[in-house]
Image (cartoon, rainbow, N blue to C red; front, side, top):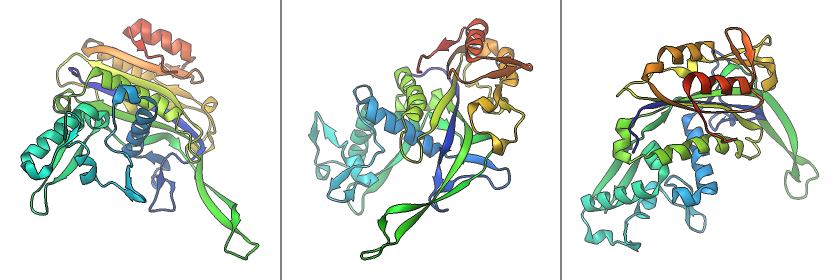
Length: 331
């Protein structure tokens, strides 16, 4: 079981792609109109983790609760029907008519927590229905919570028009037109906390957390869809504390970009270095409260500390030497 609180900082970039489209706005990339900052929801990041674990780590994770399941031709399960997939004992389906609502909740809760890593990680509100009059819900606060992801620079939206492969309608020679919106470049930072107190209720383990980190890094790298191809993980840091109910907080805000370009003109990771001066100073100041640091870094990233440039190898050396950090070898 998780015994210590930890913080996660995860940075990745997206090149000529749409990191997180807004379905209410022509599926355009989400951008804060006041600041020009690209926004990516925590829901998008959690979906990345879920998809990776279900598609590539089935042996380790058993099942994922939140996923699209077709139970009949063209019909997709709702949350109540999905919950009843776990109304079982010794592999046999139980008859809910023979159970009280409380018994249904207990069986479903135990089975979901034992089988579904995404609920152990992120929690959830799961509706339970015995009949039209007897209804309830399982509410679990997820130990792992992420804030909205934000680009570390201003971005611009590029509008691309093109033609489709088919005629606009039968008998016409004119092809259909398509519109899409992409960001030429966005360097995105996510911040998360793993709450050891909430983990006691969802039974989150260290093995689950290891799979979470794999899902963040390799899930982002393997998200090869038309709108997401071009995403690469660049830096992942997990800081684990030894003091009860303690974390530094806002570690993501202690990382910036050192560049001579305007944010909107940045096009790849070679156009800047990551300024980690404040982050490293903060970690040094709180070293006595840190039990362990785990990290992964992409070889193409460069860093700046106290105005001195460093390669990814330099960064790795400093993390190991100064903080006895563990490199995760997720690359």
